[in-house]
Length: 389
Image (cartoon, rainbow, N blue to C red; front, side, top):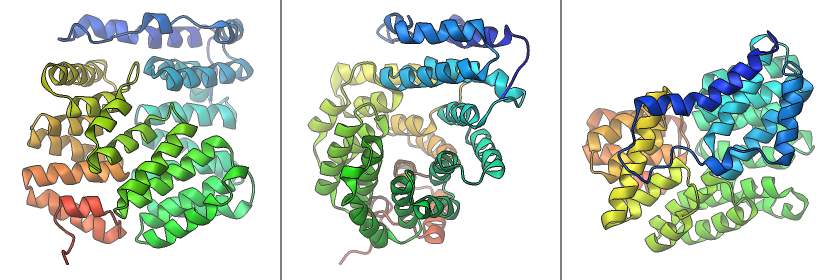
């Protein structure tokens, strides 16, 4: 990943940092409480300041660009500040564009592409890396995850099986993603058995991998209708990875499905929430607070459109459903489903179809469910596909 004039990296980083400000000239949030930027989080701490200084002195060198990009991504996740993900992309872009970067640099760059939903670009990078080195376990795991997200369950299954067979450090994650790919291909009971067996090895597995294994098990329990067990497992996973908003959202959704709206509301009430958390909070709120959260969510989505970012179509669909705009929800859900086919994506599409009673969309989803043999009690209930005893 890259080269070019020494100042190019600086220009790109400045462009990423000022992108929001430029967009603000074109877009004015209606809610006076809408947070455009958290100024206190823009100043680098001492470790990050040192990495920035090193990179500015040698902007074209991968040895300085990669640690800085990794630190920026970590900061984006910990503080729920997307701007730092954009800055990481900007730091690495010159290396990628000039094909100078090594495997680690390209993997991190692909991660930034995934963040802004450029799944095709990320997948191309993963494919290239694996053509260069088929034993690159880190890249194979990332490609497996992306294939699961995009609905390429056979492809994910092949990658996951390879990882599981290696017996190395990536094997536990390989078994977990293999279970997910099996569940998405009509083998839900077998997937549950595999994760149960893997759970016995948990003390020897790193915390981040344990969180993934447990949350995957929770999702399978939820799809089988065991909501209380799913909630308990999601809570365990979130305790291991408290900054993982995908787990927090999944737990909130499971609490709502179990009827615990108050518990879900408390769970979602974090400082500087991501859009996924904010939209769910808006859907659960009442009165003036609901109106305020709805405005904030709408402003966020509008700001993405003004900036030209890849929009959060899943959240747009959820928000439209909460606002009672079924046609808009279906349009967003179908757009989202073209790129993402995780459990939440399948369910929001099912909800939008049920709300609009669109027969063509229903037939398309039913055909996909039959072709993949994807099993989920919640989706089947939404679409009234499950036979009653």
